[in-house]
Length: 193
Ligand SMILES: CCCCCCCCCCCCCCCC(=O)SCCNC(=O)CCNC(=O)[C@H](O)C(C)(C)COP(=O)(O)OP(=O)(O)OC[C@H]1O[C@@H](n2cnc3c(N)ncnc32)[C@H](O)[C@@H]1OP(=O)(O)O
Image (cartoon, rainbow, N blue to C red; front, top):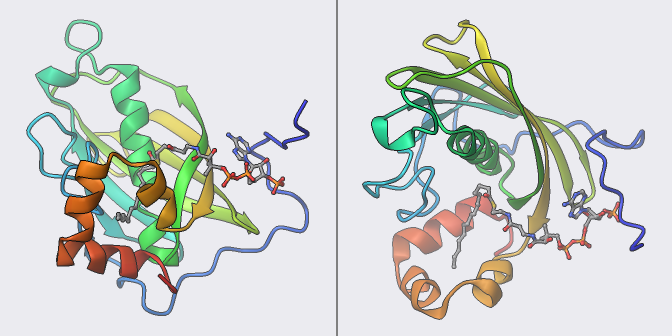
């Protein structure tokens, strides 16, 4: 036993999330954090998620389920829906100006999502405890107030840029470090890069 705490309930001495003063304004579209990202990037097989800043430390996003996202005939694959939730939760980084990665993601699949449906996602930070960011997300079918299809509770862990440099494949890391736009995004995520 490592003694690691694995729960998704914030400890009692957690702090309320703080929106960074330089965070994008509510309604502003958040760009891709990486052009090759499966969730928010611009690659043909990806989800092509567009995310916007919300009020407080929250974001919204829309994702249209396409034929390539199927699990059962005519229905979205659960892993794809979990990826959409994960990506939306990851976008909360923009509002806090921290870089954080998913440590734990717990998903409830409430109702099937048909191909062609537009999933309206909303994510928010609920509490922060040191490097641990407790957050949650909901996905509704076809409208922001449509029926809930998926829900997630997650724990994101704050990391430094070194997390990617040390663990990513050299080819992509070198390309990212040579790309001024990518470096600018890293700076926008991290207060002291
Ligand atoms: C040059 C390029 C620049 C690019 C710049 C921009 C990039 C912007 C990228 C954003 C990306 C977003 C995209 C979407 C979100 C993903 O999909 S992220 C990808 C999926 N996630 C991963 O790959 C993470 C893999 N896991 C890891 O690397 C490590 O396990 C972690 C998460 C960094 C934690 O490791 P660690 O830093 O050593 O932390 P550790 O001391 O083990 O734990 C710290 C605390 O967290 C708790 N904890 C850790 N893991 C867990 C867990 N699984 N469950 C519960 N508690 C946990 C520990 O219990 C501990 O709690 P306390 O003891 O402090 O109370």
